[in-house]
Structure formats: structure tokens, C-alpha cells
Amino acid sequence: FPTVLQCCSLPPLHRKNLHSQSEDDDEEETETAVRAWPSQSSILSGDDGLKERPASSASQASYVVNERLQELVKMFKERTERAKEKLIDPDDSDDDSPTASSPEREMEEQQPQSRLCCKVTPPRWIRALLQYRFPSSIDPFTNLVYVLWLFFVTLAWNWNVWLIPMRWAFPYQTPSNIYLWLLADYLCDLIYILDIMVFQPRLQFVRGGDIVFDKKDMRKNYMKTFRFKMDVISLVPLELFYFKTGINPLLRFPRLLKVMSFFEFNDRLEAILTKAYVYRVIRTTSYLLYCLHCNACLFYWISAYEGLGSTKWVYDGKGNSYIRCYYFAVKTLITIGGLPEPTTLFEIIFQLINYFVGVFAFSIMIGQMRDVVGAATSGQTYYRACMDNTVKYMASYRIPKDVQNRVKTWYNYTWQSQGMLDEQELLVQLPDKMRLDIAVDVNYDIVSKVSLFQGCDRQMIFDMLKSLRSVVYLPGDYVCKKGEVGREMYIIKAGEVQVVGGPDGKTVFVTLKSGSVFGEISLLAVGGGNRRTANVVAHGFANLFILDKKDLNEILVHYPESQKLLRKKASF
Image (cartoon, rainbow, N blue to C red; front, top):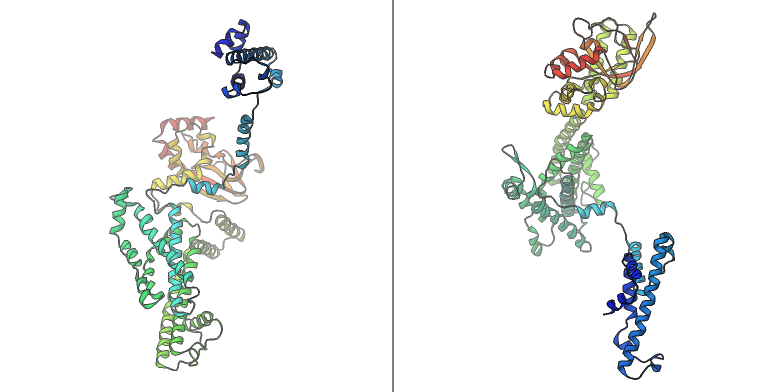
């Protein structure tokens, strides 16, 4: 009813303009209409204006309706004028037009601002942790999360390995701190349980050459292994005897049976480290320290059994007990000497066992350390042996000193720049596909930028990469000479070479830099025109890729289109 009255009370022009209003004006109309029509209680409530109106309820209602209609007509006229102004000058009308505001709208506008001000963005690692989803299967060889988990399992295992004998022998476990020891023990047990229940049943395995991802098969495979039996035995709850014997750390001895996780962590960590020999040295040293640790615990236990300070041989109870006993273990196992003579039969037997164990243990440790260091320096040892044999050969044939110095310089620079003398020897044991993948990752960026090979078959370039040889040239070395029979093509990997000639043979015609190719004319020429057309000299140290003519011809047989393209480019 109000809408009909409003539309009927406006002229046609006003109605036409009303249809061209924006969405903001429509919202303003709704709010204005809501304010213009109060509730029935407000109409019937007494105020100063109503006191002068007619007394009957019908006349009061008609009077109020007429008054509200007039107000609405007035407001629609004002809106029509604003609409005209907006059509004439839309920029000014947006600024000048008043907007109906209410406390509710102001609160709605302020709430988003307050939310933006109070919004805190968490760090990236927290967001990554919240978005992480535990995988249904784990690759034990490449998954770094699994390696990190093995690190925590290894920490729990080392806690038991090192501290169980120490808590059993030394009086470090007291009633005042027993709860801290138990808390750490049960935290390690929780790590053991999570490893058995969560991680190990999700490890992928190979069956018949196929990688198995099925949850049920992975769980069954783990339960069939010897490792599963050892893991279960390691969690045998012998702590139940605490109620009868008291808290004895030796009852946690089965926890040491989870040693397979320790060895697996060593293998996985060495596979991802670039210098694994450093970790091997640290691990071998830790074996030696653990032997001394166990001997120190046994020495204190024997001293406590016979009585601290009861004889000259036992520990006298002075100073730090662990440090003093560890010092005794070092002197005993290394057989340094200077120890007090044992007096009782028990002390003599213990000392004899210490001497025998020390001889065997230290000989094994020294042998392992020698193997680790030898494996870490095997490449350098091979380089030194090659250089020594070459120098010895040149000296025996009385090669001039300047030539000997250049040979020594080549050996030194090649080793420092590449870390090896021949890259092909390093990759010869790999399958052909793997050698291709490595060659593509190492050399493809350089070869693909060579203009000579632009437009050639991509697979032809891949086959060519496997035949490239890397050679280092010293400053002033002739890479090729004019008139020589060309059997090789060169691609500059690093450094510069110069094309020289002239009457004196020293005039520089052009300098070729990384990515340039030379020698392709002689290599691709047919009909006997395979002689070098210029001299090329290394300007500084230059590392070049060499492609033999025989290898290139064997490759181009399978790519006739690329062969035509290369010979066409070489003819220009």
C-alpha cells in the first residue's frame, strides 16, 4: 500500500529517474522508509504534537498517514534532484550527496577495520606445519621427514645406551630427581611406540621389481621382518618389577635392542650428506668414547662393591666420580701405565680383561679410522700418485724443465677446478640412462646455446652429450694448428681462446668465449677438406668440450636431417 501511494504521487519524470538510481540509493530508500514508518506503539504514544490533533482514533490515524505521505513525497523530490545532478556531473554528485547514516551502519563499517587491525599472520613454518598431511606411504630412501624421525629414534636409543649403565653404576639417580628420570624414560618409550605403530608400517618396499604402496601389504611386510620382532622385544615392560625390586635402571635393558634403527639412520644420513666421511669419523670416535664410558661405569661399580677407598686400586670417592673413573678407563684401555697395582684377585682379573679389551678395541678403532680417512682422501691420493708417476717418468727421460712445469701446472689446475682428473672414469659404472641424465643436467645448458646446433634434433644433442670429453688447456697452449687434419670439434665450456695468424703468427683475429664452437668445418667437411684453417690458442686457462669425429659420425647416421643441417651450416 505505501509503495502504490508513493508511485502514484510522483510525476512520470520522477518515476523515470527513479529507475536510474544506483544500488546505494536503493539502500538509502529502504533505510529512509523504515524510519518514516514508525511502529504502531510510537504512533499511539503521546507527545506534544499529538495533543493538538483530533481526539478520535480514526481521525488521528488518517492525519498521521497524510503527514507521512507528504514527508515521503518531499524526500522523493530531493532524491530526484540528486539523481539529475548525478547524471549531469557524476564526480561531484558522489561527494556532495548526503548518505543516510545510522549507528548500525557505522558499527558494520568499523567491525571489518577492527578485524583487519587484529589479524596476525603466523610465520611460514607454522603455516607449513599446519598444512602438512602425514603421507599414507613413506619412501625410506628419499623422504627427509623419515630421516628426521630416525634422528629422534636414535636420540631415544642413545639415551638408553649411555644412561642405563651410568644410572646403574653411579649414584646419580636419587629419590629427589627420580621423577625426571622416569619422565625422560617414558618419553623415549613413546618414541619407540610411535615408530612401531606409525612409521614402520608405512614404509614402501620392493616386491618382484614393483614398489608396493598398499597399507595392508606394507604393514604385513613389516610384521614379517626380524626388525619387527626386535622392536617388540625392546618394549617388553620389565618396569613392572619396579614394584618388587624398586626402580632399577637395568630393567630397561631391552630398550637397547632397537639398535637397527640406529644403523638405518647412519645409512640414510650418509646418503644425503655431501661429505659423509666427516660423519663416519664422528661415529667411529663415539664408539671409542662409549667403550671408555662402559669401562668407567664398571670401575665405579667394582669400587663401590669393594668399598670406596678400601684399597689403593679402587676409586677413593674424592672429586667428581664420573670424571675420575673415566680417566682411569682411558689410562687402562690405552695402556698408558702409571696405574696403582691391583691387590685382590678380583681386581687383577678385571685389570687383565681391561688390557685385553683395550688392545683389541683400539686396534679395531684405529683400523676403522684409517679406512674412513683413506676413503675420504682416495681421490686426492690417486691424483698425487698420477702426478708423482708422471714427474718420475719425465725425469727419467730428461724432459725439459719448462715442459715439466707445464705438466705440473696442468695437474694442479685440473684437480683444483674439477676435483678429479677424468670425469668419464667416475661415471663409467653407471647405466647409460643415468649417465645421460647427469650429462644433460651438467652440460645441456651450454651445448643448447651453441648456434651450430640450433634446429637439430633434441635427441641427437642428448646422444652427443654422452660423447663429450672435458679437457683443460693452459695459457698459451695450441688447441689446434693450421693445416692439421681435423678429427675433433671444440665447445668452450669456460675460459677464452684466440684465433691467431698473420706473418708472425701472433695477430689475434677473434676471441672466442664460453659457448662458442670451432673446428666444426674440418669435422663436417666431406671430400678431403678436413684440414684446419686457422691456429687457435688458449687465452688463459680454458676448459673445452671435445667431440671426436668418429663419435659424431656414429650419431649422425641415425639423424639424417640433422646431418644435412649441420653440413649446410658448416659450408657457410
